[in-house]
Each structure stands twice: as structure tokens, then as C-alpha cells.
Image 1 (cartoon, rainbow, N blue to C red):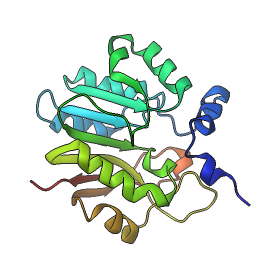
Image 2 (cartoon, rainbow, N blue to C red):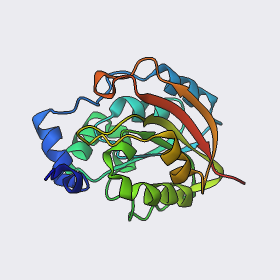
Image 3 (cartoon, rainbow, N blue to C red):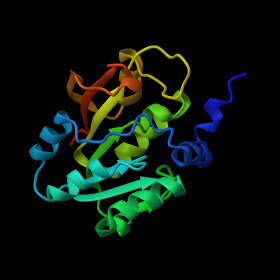
Image 4 (cartoon, helix red, strand yellow):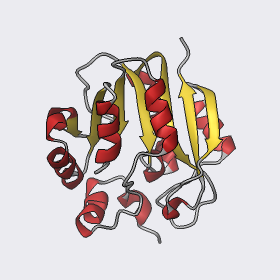
Length: 200
């Protein structure tokens, strides 16, 4: 029996990968689609990055563009490394559980998604969508890179169009969906850049 599905919901599952350097999903640059999105945001937008891992490139890109960025992950190793690489944002990088942490702030304008949803077993996806909707202001945006395809040896756990509609359609309206031309090998060109908007 495959034990990875339940394990992937635990911090230890991911901390072991960070400790051993098994992080094929980690970017060493800011993708072009993300750059365009950051530039399109209103000044000083409030941005939340759940499951941030060690992704200093993305966190720093939002920060340098003048946005108020908060990042959260439940892996102590990932959070420690991210805080060390971005000391100016140390207080905005939270060690905690996205689903239960109390964010002491106004609602967010944007929740940025990359590799967090696909790290979660599908039984948790509806809870993810509901949680994102709770944290966003009216007309706020869930935006980022979403992994699609057929399941092989998860994680990552892939979406399909029908499932995405069921997971997000109750809360959001899709505004943008386009292929990602420069996916990392681990995702095999199966990512989509999508923007899901909360109604007013």
C-alpha cells in the first residue's frame, strides 16, 4: 500500500525532502507569467503565499515590487532557510499550518499558488478552496501555477478540468487559464497559469 498520501500531509514528509535536497520543484528564477502578474497588481497589494517552502525568489519578487507579502509553511527546515535568505522579511515568514493559523491582518488581495495544492491529497482540495476564499477580500484573486494531468506516483497530485470546476467553482470565477511554456521537468509541461477571482 502506498504510504505517501497520508504522509504528505505531515511536516516531516517535506522536512525530510528539504534536509536531503530532494526538491525538484524549487525554482531558481521568477517565471515570466508570474512577473507579469506581479506588475499588474495594484500598489501595496496584500499577498499570501501558502506552502512557501524555500522559495525566496517568489517571496522576494512580490516584496521588491512593493507588495505586502506573507508566507507560511509547516516545515521548520524550509521556514528557517527562507528566513535566513530573506532576513528583512523574517517576521512575515510564518511557521504554521495554513488551514488553522490565525492571520492577524486584513483580508488578502491575492493568494499565490504554486506546488501547495498539488502537495495535498485530493480529499483536502475543497478545504483548501474554502480556506482561500475565507482569507481573501471580495474580488480577491487566487492566482498561480496549477498542476494538471493523470495521477502516477503522487505527490504531486494532479487536477483535471472537471475536478478544478468542482473544487473552485463554488467559490471563484476563472478569469485566466493558459499553458505554462517553461515548466520544470518534474511537472513535465503539465502546469497551467490560472487566475480565479472571488465574487464581490
